[in-house]
Length: 424
Image (cartoon, rainbow, N blue to C red; front, side):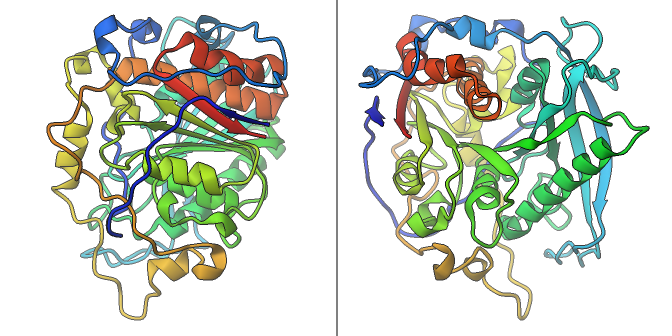
């Protein structure tokens, strides 16, 4: 089935920095982030929903129901994981390390006060175990708290969600953040999945018996979105345990041609149509190359930087366009340190031509018309992101037809800033 609900432009620029950014470190988000946007928030471009020609189910759920927190309180804890089987490469002044230190944030269904945003080290509620497991990958210059608003919503509905500070792409990386370690990040994901499955299989720890090995999914933003795609689809880097993938404004997609998508795994792409850092064309290209089943959710007036957790604060409502901040941040860093002698180039490390990596003309970040157009408020963008990602995971990991019907038939009807394309 093919259903077009929003068409996008196509263009290309010279191949250069196809990189990522997500600012901030997880401020608490006010409850009114799920409220309807004021009329002035809506950009001039509109999405026109087109009903599916062959509806799969009667859409009964509403956006308000999908955005309602679940029956569990949300616990959060920090783990210190270390992968001693793989090194951290040298990076500028950093000489490297024989292991990979992975500071890990975990959100989980908990016992306690459901009114609290999250409760540090709360007792895990195992009443619904085993739970689906989701790993979230942060963007360039960001950290493990970046997708906290998504993780908290999922945890309240009975998910365990983990995120790490990737050793060399987080904002505090030794030697300075770099994108050149992206090929090692899928291995970090695999190690964390292994660690949680081992904890679940063992007794005497917080996560004993809580992880469902058959319901594992990935999400990620920007550079983390590119990492998500690598760990899901790459013939050389993928993890076969992944059952669904949600990529928010993913990086590197401009270089991932059809052969890159080596397997059929349900894919959701969420992208803002005025993204100044990874232009919208990269999303439409990725959608055209990936195998079915696949969804492209377009946020009309959505920026890149507002996907990050910190932009859910009411203090950011006055921002004209969060990508003004993102572009300034990118202009202050060099994401490409000089390679170490004898080190293969990134093209080959990602799989090369045989792996579907194609060096083609790609849009440059932050080179569009200035000043940037007005963007959705961060809290509204967060609500729309949750309303896309949560139903997708519920449909793919729990087989909920009502959530699939909402995603395919109701989401764009109820929210003027959303357009949906799907093939399955």
